[in-house]
Image 1 (cartoon, rainbow, N blue to C red):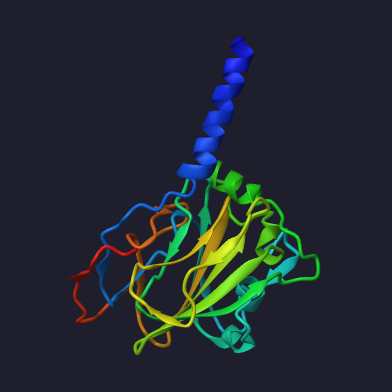
Image 2 (cartoon, one colour):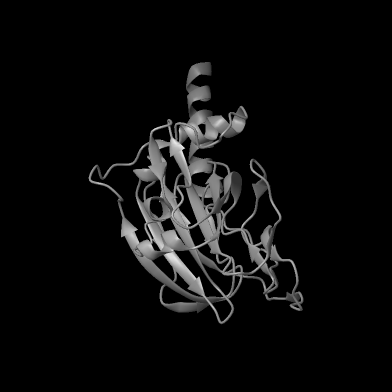
Length: 244
């Protein structure tokens, strides 16, 4: 009887996590500010990398060199010649999995699929283990960065354009896009990744002087945490209505 009750409790806990806790979408008070670039996802910063024209971002297992287009699948190899910053945010099974626009602007979906011929998702457990046990660099053994399914977007306004890529985990059921070819406000929900994932953000600086406001292994929240900020700007905070 005790074993039956324990099994029922475990199944109930799993169902609560799987069908309610994991899919929660808490309301957030977004403070819109054109001088700031907000986090597109809840999770842990697994890397912050400076991107220089033609340079590899990093290598996996000391052998597989990764460029920006290999990682983000943006459909534009010319981006490998852009300077900027790349941030990877690892979303654990306990994080909110709704993704939000880091800036206001026009959002357009660039593509959705697998980067290679394998067309299968690997587990992201290595990323979670590296962050948990502080194994550096945190992308060590993370083959999923160049194998797993992903969806990529560009968000642009009159001041800048930046790029977001959602990367699926092995257990992901679906990458969902709520918005495409439409205007979004800063902090607005634009997508969802079910059952664990990662979101990458590439910010071309185009001569702008950006201050990095986060560090690797830091936990961030979509629409609330500032990732980058212009070092000199007259832009001011303007409270926005709660983002959907």
